[in-house]
Image (cartoon, rainbow, N blue to C red):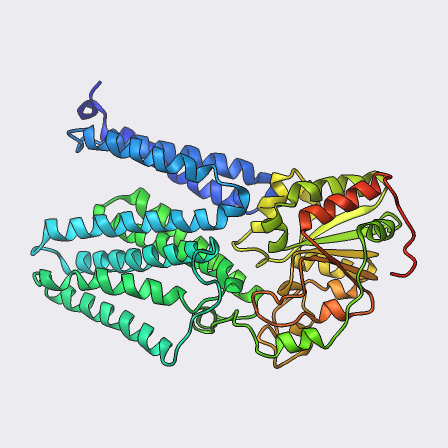
Length: 470
């Protein structure tokens, strides 16, 4: 049977099933217990959508499609096999490639249809190209910051916000003019070039602490641009899939912003993440209490309850599997071990959940901030692994702090606090963490993977020693 013989109704039926699977995928991905099912639903839905599209009778030659599939596979397979710690930047690259595709399709459609482009179509097409272009360069910049090939700290200059907003306003004004005069083809490159520049300038002033929100926001932009492309191509499936992507990314961005007690405008223009000039001096003037792996293991082994708070330091050290061994060692001793997950811990939404799931830590042990905070005052030991700003009590007490008002994990309310950290350097917010100077806090300096491994060996019986002098 040739593609010309396949009924249009059959293709639409496949599209309908794919749409249902996309909706179910989002629903199942919202809970760790059903996340794997959600991934499978999304993948099957995408296979059906692509397969049905390839059966479309409008396709007369598969040569270039086959070449594109091979090239895409050659690029995509290595990208999909990256280590878990590189998932955030790989996600940003996915947004970039998707947005580039949208911009190229929009550009081709404009020049193919001009000068007879209906005003509504021109408006949607302009939105598609503008969002696609700024998402492309913005995502590349985000990936560069996450990969640390670009400066992670915010780069700001006087009048920066005015410049950025002016550029976007010019692009929108050009788009409005093209809606009224679609035959002015010489102006179309402006709604490609200006957003490309804007995408770079939009990410430059954003620090690493805001990167989870930025990733979800770029995901939203990519989805909205795809939905606009659906209108241009008259594809109901693309409209629905793009709308689902765009709306879910937007809702997630709102959740992430609330988790930091900040607005979108503050995230995009606040330059959160600049090092405070007083931080270094404050660190030098104060002392902390330290402990060895042997001393830490003795305290942990005698505890009834332990809450582990993972952060980006755990991801960098690739310590999640050692953390699983740590969980097993304490559980065998009868210790109740739970994990407190902050919504913005790490470099992307759900970063800590992904890493801990990779290590096969039971889902019911992973509790979000609202669920774990009421338990922390009754917790014997809170072990912080590479988390900084999300545990800083200054967010509750210091009105001058850039993180004031940000909901945090109340680890300072536990009976004993241990912090595994390489050094006393500040986190992405660039401020000192008051948690480190509490009398109940013990600093465990070193690489997270190595230190957790040392604790596990001590718990296994290689020398649980006295905690005297800690």
